[in-house]
Image: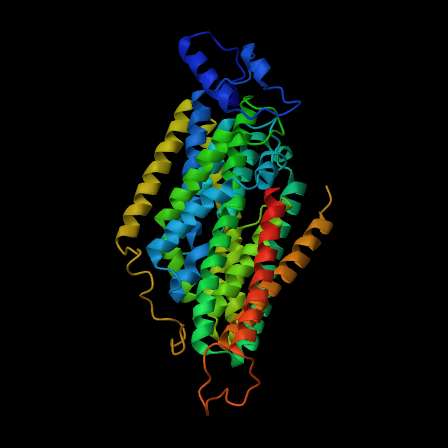
Length: 422
Length: 80
């Protein structure tokens, strides 16, 4: 069924094709030993032929990246906004800019995604499209509910579900899923929580005799720096995921050789999409993380952000595609517990844990259905695209009934009377 | 495909050490900076061992420099 879309066809020499080829020739990063080298392209080797479906997938991937951005603004900025270290508008602008910078820092995670999770020889761009549909829908739904679920798990889930339906169980590398996704997913929030807990405890212990005004002001400045680091870390980890997907698409379409890294235009467009999404600000999730988890003070915010940034950057560097959302959330709970165990709203934690548990399977189911429908042919793919757009519009309309934005994001009674709120 | 326990272990150790170290350093720096603010007599901190404003600022400077060095080194490893 995927035959229809496979674009390993021999190129025809029309003008349009040539223009397209020349455009990509300039933007492909040339690597030693890569078949799609400049010389080969100049000779007109059929390596760079992009069909309509590939373009559709790239656009959908960037749309996912956008949702990833606003879904995850909270990770970096929720506590800074809640403690007043940064004004909401300034916070999202800073986060957006740093995400863009972060996107250029590392491509380790992109490589994990584009080489290993699913067998790229056995899936087509349509399968990836279906996977993205699953991921986007789940992201939008959890955003509407204000739940900080993992965009990464939504992406992996959608991709795995779609691959299972289209190419069977053999095409999913469950070993890689376990070691690169599931294990980091279990360990990273606990690790971030533990680091934040110890750090928070120490921060309060050390500064117990310090001048109150000085510590408050100092930790506020510290928070601005640490929040920036989280935004940067988010760029190195989450922007990579979309780059990985687009690279995977180009590989399955035969436009790139297997195991190649993302070309420059992919890095740039993915970085821009996530930065723009981040700037939009997922105010619903910011409110949940900043105000409903715990009454966060500046030392806690600083400890939480520092822990999250360290865990994410260390993992990114070693190629673990962990969920920045889960790390940031784990760190916030840890920081809440580090001051006083009772001040954490464990009920909210339960809600989030449920959303985390459901994210991968739910996105997988949507991805599987989308793959099944799109697999029926061009009409099926169009139906899936229309359903996606309609659902997105519906969710947006629903969100307008109780809008949350930069102006009212902090207007929530804190879970514990904010007697000593910094 | 085996689980990369080695890498996972490194991530855990580095995160724990670096995260805690940075927060502690910043906290110590703030304690140092507090020496510049005067302590109200009879307050909860009256009689606590104090350092001179100059020494406090120096401590703060060293701590913040150390924290900045750790962060800078980490970023440098990633970029290089």
